[in-house]
Image (tube, rainbow, N blue to C red; front, side, top):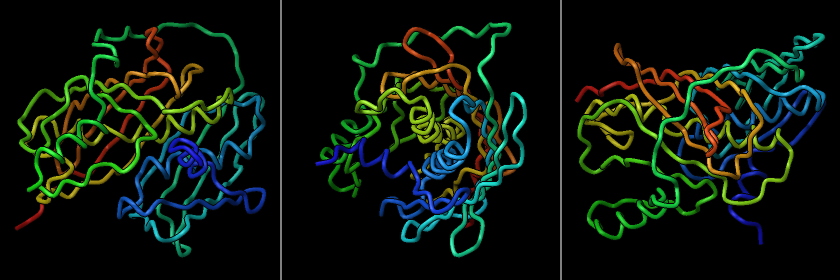
Length: 285
């Protein structure tokens, strides 16, 4: 019987229809296709059209329309550039012939260069923290009147250093740290690890922009969605080993929130960075 992580890998590694055409499916939950899923599937489609010696180093994407999980997603890859050291692919995701997502993905050959990085902040190790899966399962049992729907599976382990009280959110500094890990052996193909990290990277960014405010993504008074997303890969890594996602939100306003993130290995190596602008609009009652 396939494990939860095997099912997730199969979901994110899209089906190839033609040389530059792919299709992806979605789970029934949530009711709107998760942005990290589309990011990962688009990246996986682009990766499959590039020589293995070219490694993804950046991805810039826009979420154009909500995705319907009951319909397949078609990924059209445009091979717009194959240079001596850089390769570029544009990917459009469509449902019913209408674009729901667009992205530009760049690949680079390995080469030496000047090196520096910010140090990782000191936080408790993941072994000392409760996972989101266990916490939400516990909260649902402790609050039967709240109609909380706990997660049904746990392919990605998430452990927040200072988890927010989603039932009674209080304003706090717009910073958080979360340990992430795929719960299973992903093998040694870096492209698979990059696909899984693209999926992980959409967790926490929008929530970081809500931290200074008495709202969470669960708040029905709030209309929220990812608008755009940028992802940079700096170093090789394993997504099935613990990575610390350090997030902050420098500003929000005009119905939009801006957030940034950095993924570090346990040894303190900065392996990936993210940035995202999100819609955080209060609904008119």
